[in-house]
Structures are given as C-alpha cells and as structure tokens.
Image (cartoon, rainbow, N blue to C red; front, side, top):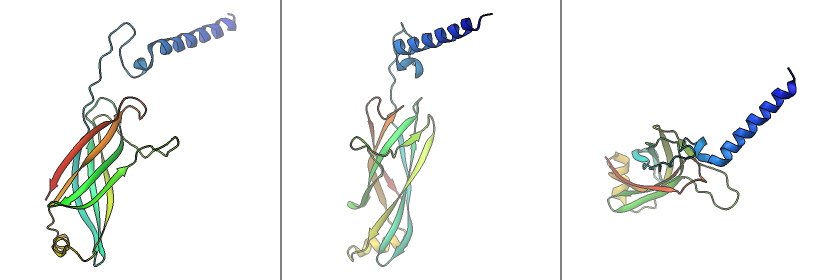
Length: 179
C-alpha cells in the first residue's frame, strides 16, 4: 500500500481534531457541554478555611516569634488556585499582628506564588510572625509566656478555579477564636 495514504489520513485526523477544538472552545477540554448542548453553569463552592492554631516558637525579653497554621479545603469538582490569604490576629479587641500568605500578581511580569488545591483535597499553610516587646502591655506578655492568650483570627482567602486568568477571583472571609 502507498505510504502517502497513511500520511494523508494522519494529516486529516489532526486537522479534524484542531477544527473540533477550535469550534467547541475550551468547554470540550474542561469537560463542559458538547457542541449543540446547553452549557451547565459551574457553581463555585467557597474554599473552607480552618485556623489550626497559633504556637509560640520562641520568646525572649525583646519579643516573640509565633507561627500561624491555616488549613484550606477545596470542595469543588475542579482544582482551586489560591493566590492570597490575608489575616489579622487579635487578643480581646487589640490587634496584635497582621500579615498575608501568598501574593497577588502586580504588573506585567511577576513571579507566581500561588498554591494549587486539588479537588476534594486540603493544604496547610504556615506563616511566621515576629512580635517586638516595646515595654507596653505587660499583661499580654505574661499571658503569652504562660500560654493563656485567647486568640481571634480573621481574614480573607482569594482563589480561582482552573486558572488565574479564567473567571473571576473568589473571596472567602473567615473568623475563628482559638483557645
């Protein structure tokens, strides 16, 4: 048999595949509706945020180093891309610290610092917080040294499904009191 027939059949199959992808768009690749069917809207479930705790790593007369641990769970059928978790730490009504884990893209060129959370999976993120003892609030420092501080953590987590360039950014607010 003539090998030109096999080459022609391969080129025709590739061309048919390219035309199929071009006409159906990304919905075919992402498991969406086939051509001629009504697309089903994907309902984005919020990522679940659980503050695991705040532990004292080290403590001295000049200050303390704390570690915050946060677990995020993705209940969606697709992977979630977490860009940023912003948080504030309070004791009583007094704000002790504020910070963020991750970053948002700024400008045209920026290194990605995103976290991928697979469907039905979770990820635990940790951040180090440095507190400086300036001589004020002696009750707070005594409670921190004895381990009896009642913490309250509030913040927001920002995520997208599938990719950072498709769809809108989703925001989840959270607040949790720790013993």
